[in-house]
Image (tube, rainbow, N blue to C red; front, side):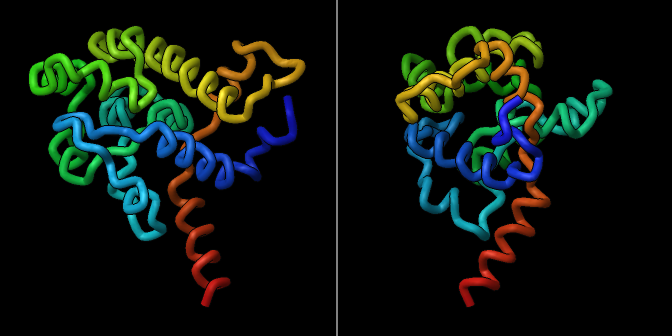
Length: 184
């Protein structure tokens, strides 16, 4: 395992992950509107990060927090769409996305690194398959941005490690507070 996968670097990885999402010019699920990534990435804004498979749903399925808060389960979403989706399973709100967006649905999903395989897994509430397909897209996007390959590790190993990383909101907030204090 590479040193940059260390849990001590989780806050940094989460910030890099947010920038990766923002770089793809994500569109909000329900209306297809371009997400204001400047606003979404603001230190004080935690309402535009969305668990694609809701926490409550996954907790009721017996999953632990570490398996729920993985980066592959997080996307940027407008606050209004996030509130409207709330705790709905993807099998419910993905259908609404298809109905509301019509021919634009695939473009909106791809802007959030959700290909048709991940979308179908979401429609079936298949969390494991969803994470696999979305992780592959995220890793490929990161590789393209970095213009390099992860050395000495197969894509399967990288996906496994990426899924081990949780989006650590509490630590991220604590880190942001220390950043604010350092700036003042």
